[in-house]
Length: 129
Image (spheres, rainbow, N blue to C red):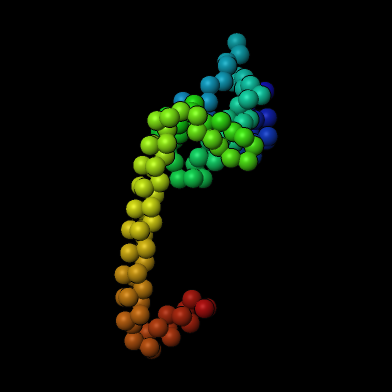
């Protein structure tokens, strides 16, 4: 199938599919005309890529873990023993980012709470809250 059909079947923009190819995540054949030719299994590969992106993994990490995952239809299952350590490290990185963002939000909430009542009223009025 050509890139437009893969895009329609996966609901992923053509430019994203080209980016996945640049990152080594997709490997379409090239026709003599230069057009990309995708295999039927690339539909499932794109869905796995999207799941991993939604889980917070970057494309370089996905490149490393994608060959070690099997899709059961309702979840991705690791098939390589060393993959779990990598996934735990990614989870720890995401958990730290969440913690850092929570601390930032708490600090911002403290600044907002310290505002005088009249300043708060004007600010909220301008926000239509």
